[in-house]
Amino acid sequence: MVTWQELRSFLEKTAPPELAESYDNVGLLIEGESTEIKKVLLALDVSEYTVEQAETVGADLIISHHPLLFQPIRCLTKQTGSERAIRSLLQKGIGLYAMHTNFDSAGEGLCDAFLDNFGSFSVRSSFSGEAAGIGRIGKLKAPCNLLEVLETARQNFGNIAISYVGDPLMRVDTVAVCNGGGGDLLYDAYKLGAQVYVSGDFKHHHARFAAENNVGLINISHYDAEIGFSFLLEKKLIDKFGERLQVICSYEQNPWKEF
Image (cartoon, rainbow, N blue to C red; front, side, top):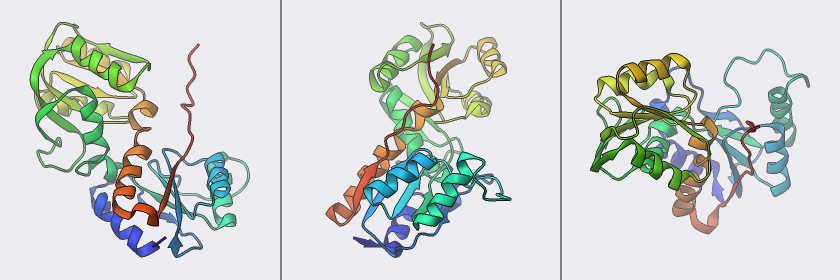
C-alpha cells in the first residue's frame, strides 16, 4: 500500500494541476475515508456503474480522466446519474481524483501518446512551443501522404470509425493533434503550419474550413481518442509503486452505437 500523500505527490508531479485549462476541475474532487491506498480504479468517465465496480474490487480511490464534478452542483438527489454517483461515492467512502487537461498537456501525457498513433516524429512540441501544454505538433521522420497517416491510425486504433477531410494523396510532413474534443484548436494547428490536424467532436464549420484551406482533418471519436488514459496511467503507477499498489482499469464501453 501507499499513503494518500505519497500517491497524491506522484499524481501532481506526473500531471501538474497548473497545466489544466482555466475551465477545468482537476485534482482531489471527493476525499475518501482511507489515508492508505491499497487499490485504485482507473476510468475515463465516472458513473454509478463505475462506483459499483470500485466497490466490488475494493478500490479506495477512483482516478478518472473526465471530472465528475465539473459544473456547480446545487443538489444531491437521485434524479440524475451524476448525482447518484456522487452520493454513492460519499456513502461508500471512496475517493475521487481527476486528471483531465493537465494530463493531456503534461510531458509524456495523453497528447504525446495520441500523437504517436499517427507516425514517427523527429521533433515535437505543444502548440505553445513548450514541451508541456495543450496540443502536440510534430515533424514526421519520413514525409508521407494523408492516406498513409490514415492507414497508420487504423493500424494503431484497430477497427474504429475514422472520418477525414482532404486529398488522400496530399503531402504530409507536419501533424498536429489534440485528443478529445479539440475542434476549435484547428485554427491554431493551421497557423502553426500543420498539414493534418487530428482530434474529435468536430463540427461542420471545422470541416468546411479544412476543405477550403487544404488542411487534412482526421476525426477520431472522443472515446477512442481518450480511452487509453487508463492504460497509460496504469503503466506509470506500476512503474512507480510496483506491488505496493494494485491498479485496475475500469471496463468501459463507448456510449455511441453504430447502426
